[in-house]
Length: 262
Image (cartoon, rainbow, N blue to C red; front, side, top):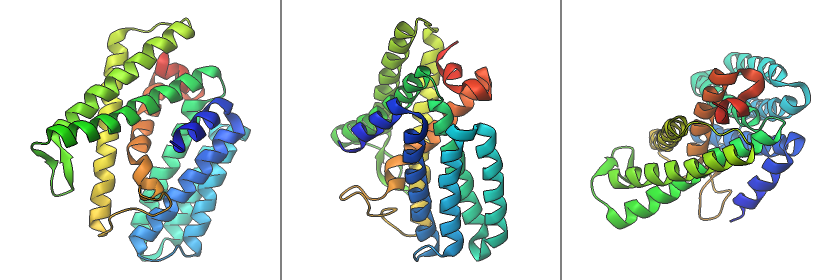
């Protein structure tokens, strides 16, 4: 209930406010990643990487996607040089959160279309999570991946897929109506299915990493809900996939249009 209005305000405001929110969330998520893989509070290389992620986010609305991409390259070089014994995990974490940072900012873009693209993304992911939780608890049944996440079931995955897809389709048609650029139902359906599935895979991937390092939650910043990574695991992977779809359709400068206009 706290995250929804905060996200909505930043999404509508766009530009620097949205970039600052992404900077805080992604830098905080990388802090949890570093603590998880090292088993101790972040040392100076991790703090520098956190700062670089924040700068990558802020640079996007101020200087464009290319500026963020160049800074991202410098950050990866830094992590590779000063990563130490955990170099692979540090570079991998930076690559993931850095890519997600650029993806979220590109999806929002600088126009009103980006608001609809952002709502499209979160509606699929959040309703996916909600549907999976309630259907899984009520129906139960065969475990989806007991070695990775014992609580998840195939019924929950199906329920999440249906609820996330239906929610996304509602936003898809509303966006087409308000923006006066209706797009084919089949395209919207396919995108919703792909994004919904990728969100569930993101959730499973984070569970696998946490199991690898024997931790229950990525952090404790959100009382009763774990850390930032626990809240955005589905959203980050789904966001990267949706960004790639928009990028492939319309190019770097028109990702929101590439998502919604077909």
